[in-house]
Image (tube, rainbow, N blue to C red; front, side, top):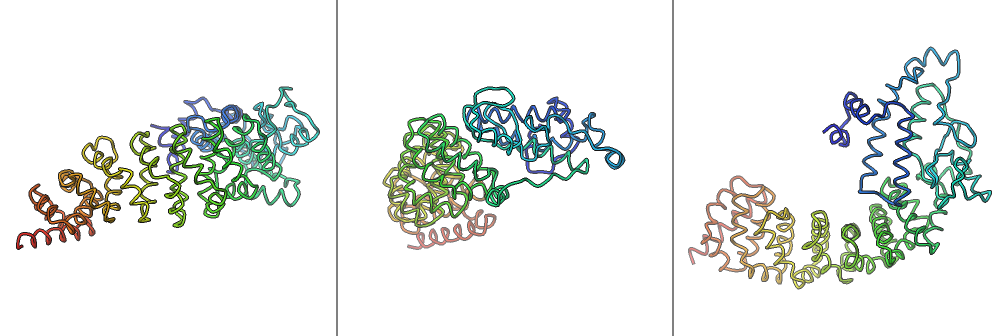
Length: 468
């Protein structure tokens, strides 16, 4: 329960964080550094995001750093710095020193061996042609440098507590601009792009995994990664025979597409047909993220037409039916957005979506009733959709929703019923025979504003049908 609360967006209680740090035996900054290294080793060894938990663990470490620094008995200077720093310079903890220069690190990065170095020092080592870790002499599987965010934050905290101002990094103007805007400098991004182009499957998988994580982190990373030319390279990797590389590539494109300007670049790189193919043949997580990518791209109206024409609707319906709970919701969201365009409503109806949506209504235990009603309400606005829905005996499940559903679901059920009844007297009679009238009267008094209007309109249609 402590962990669940600490991982929310709510400001964390210091006592709660202290309790967690004690239970996890993270008592000192050295403990924090070791945990940080282990976390980054996890990322490096799997070239991605193990079990989807890396971001949560990193977030927790950052929250714990304050109470760890405060409680660390080896750092009395943190609580008494106003007296101590007047008389002597604080001793830099060994874990904050670069193993090469032995100086306080300003921009700590992790190499593939798991060791942390100052970026400028390890870059010089690599630029000199070395292919091993300076500290362990272990051969490096690749030369990419992963920022050690947790350690950098701890160093910053320690410097602030001891009244130390870190000197400015000595970078050229181009690298300064990149450092301010992204988690990788220009050289780091160039290295990533080269690894994507390398033709070595292991290098491509690892690079795509790093871009996936970087693009998820912040908008500046998304801008810099796109400007470095990653999008066409990632699109090419969608056709990779390696399932993990394919998953990283489509998820990286999903994260990059969050930035509005990147959407056009992704579409211009002919990504949509390849994303649709991944949606058909990829692993479950890859299909889920492909569906989410199509939803993100479909925010642009012209892309709705392109995505529908590329054949995305049938595989989205397949995911809606046989996907994981998350996959079903991703598929439903994508289909809903695509069906704002009338042509995609026709495609969805012809692909047989209505029968699946009605099954969700009849058996609400699947947890898809909200999505089913939202989709039926938009499909019922299409003439072909309305006919197919009317043929699927919709009245009994709609009556049940109007009687017992949530306010939003009752509203959607009333909207669907109104669209059916406004064009078909038989549906009015069927609704009346199913005992809908009393439920509609109650809805017209207690429902949402839209639900009240729809319920009143249906009651008026019933009245007119009685008079006829």
